[in-house]
Image 1: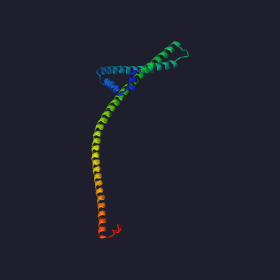
Image 2: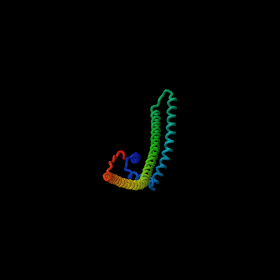
Image 3: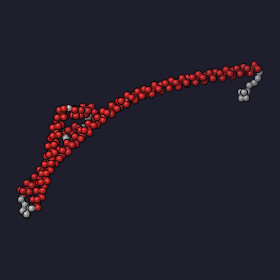
Image 4: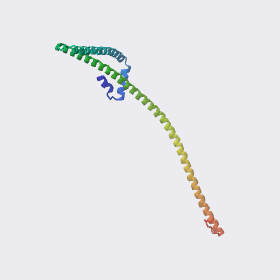
Length: 191
């Protein structure tokens, strides 16, 4: 139970990573896990034996009830009930032990896969962040070039606009001077 709580307890990523790295890579833990697997094999054998005993005791109890002949021996009935209780207890204990071993093993590997997936995600995020950073820098440079070109065009436009205004003023001045020297009146609508 304590092992399951340690596996599921919300630890920081670095602590959990170090713990599971130690549990999955350590030769000492590997030897201990090998011993635990052998113990669970023995528990599985005990589970099979407990189930067989439970069936046998249950069959003996049913046979004793059927052939009771009306006279009931309290001591024999108590003995059969005790044997039935012990057989059921052993079956449940070994069954739960096997079930919890499967749950612990599966939980360990699920959390280990989660840690590996988080590491891969972090690597991909860093790699995409660097490549995205390079792409962004390239885009920034392109945008700066386009901005400089647009500013140059705007400056050229302003220069051309000023020249055209100056040309128009000069034309108007020369036209007015020409009209005053020649004595003709100019109608700007008709001209």
